[in-house]
Amino acid sequence: MKKSQYPASVVKLKLPMVNGTLDIYQVVQKELLPTPAKSHYTFNLRDIGKVFLGMRYAPAGIEDTDKLTRIWAHECLRVFHDRLTNEDDREWFYKMLADMIEKHFKERFGKVFAPITRSTSRADTRGDALRYIMAGDFMKLGADNMQYDEITDENAVFKVMESYLEDYNANTNKPMNLVLFLFAIHHVCRICRVIKQPGGNVLLVGVGGSGRQSLAKLAASIEMFSVSQVELTKSYGMTEWREDLRQVLRKAGELDKRVMFLFSDTQIKKEGFIEDINSLLNTGEVPNLFEQGDVSMIAENVRGRAKRDGREGTRAQLFAYFVDECQRNLRVALVCV
Image (cartoon, rainbow, N blue to C red; front, side, top):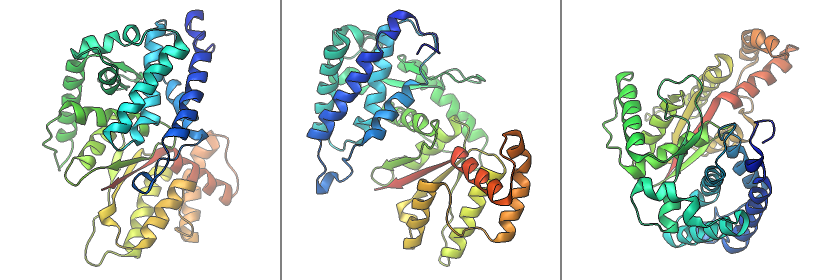
């Protein structure tokens, strides 16, 4: 915060943010236990790190303490709340988060979130204010330096999203005829937030036909990622799958292109597909995917970039650089029911 030249009044919030995040983490770990229906209700120290990773993108030099508090609350919602699967758990989290704001930041919840409730014209309730809070880095169309910030104007975000959708449809041979209602825009904001972060892979859960893939494609377009998908046929097997993976990884690591690999659970024809995706998520590569000739070619093609980055070396070192570039440029979006 000091390096970003925040004023002293805002720097004072560092302890409330740290203590509030730790408090939320401990309460969530105790109260939201995994069950057979909620097996993914598992939280660890990475979640605390993700809150502050999101805070790192907050505008430098911000002076409004209430605004920083709202951004902190937004990041807590995205890290913890977005994992919740039913309305009772979400309402419980809203109440708990509102209590934490008043406990640690010593401010009335209604005062801190007044801009949100005014802009949405909704009742000044804790659930409404937290449910409709948004943030993103895409509000200034065509800006070279995209600034992550809270979004308080619903009318403006509708217009911006419509513009992005028009741009997407104008540059693709498969246009999307989408109706962008508020709930869909919230999901686009969330996907954008995830994929802009290092290693930001995303799991999209919902019923078939709910627009998960379409919203992922729109978010990828906004964040300037190209989208790669597999085309299943009756004869599609591990050979074709591995070839598709090689193309995606070479595009990301060798050609230095930002790529979203969009994959659906309905495309899992063989168990090996999941094993490869698991390796990709954990290490950034799939073991034994490339032949030795391909490794040599990749090493030579990335040598120039590696040299500029101070990473020139042996073939193995250059391939390790290629893997790091894959992790930097590649995002996996897994669509499940």
